[in-house]
Image (tube, rainbow, N blue to C red):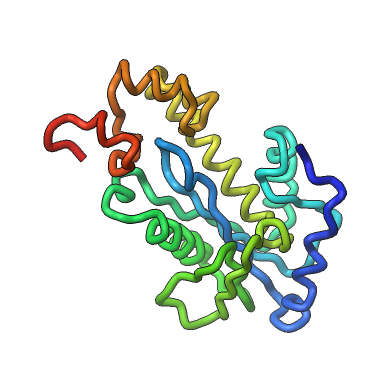
Amino acid sequence: MELLTSPDPWSFDLPFFEKYKTVCGIDEAGRGPLAGPLVACAVAWSRPCPEIQVRDSKALNENRRRAFFFQIISSCLKFSFGIVTPFEMNSLNMHQANLLAFKRAFVDLGFQPGVVLIDGKWSFEGIKHPPLIPVIKGDVKSGAVASASILAKVYRDTMMIALDQIFPHYGFLKNKGYATRDHFLAIEKRGLSREHRKSWQCLRSFLKDGEL
């Protein structure tokens, strides 16, 4: 269900634009699935864009997300993605993977905005400038963060659609790697693919001896 009555999220960003001139939002998609990468996105803006009434990607249907995707990439200063693969996630906990994806997205931006707003409680380390500001529920409060949420979600979904062509038995086209009943049944029948997050506790029973 789309939250069409929610307030303009760009109003949250106004003080940051006034102080820092350019604002970058960072968010991720893919924390919960059993398979596929974790994808973060960084989106830099030179001004608020209230004409693009962005919302948290989870509050939008697929068609609306894709429409916003093209509006955002044609209006922002720059955008980039940071990816953590399932193989990498085998040696990381979700918090570490999340911050790594955030950092990769920001570094790949190749541009230093005035400030970075990051969805959640935490920011990544190793960056002295610009200021990194965690915003709890940033994907709901901030237009800059919501735009990153949308781009990350659309990009990850597109990756999962491509992976469905390589691994057609798991239903990635439909489930995008999430833990549906049919997905579990496919794992029981076919075993785990290289795109599954094998370190996850709920998948350990499907591992072969010595596999991870």
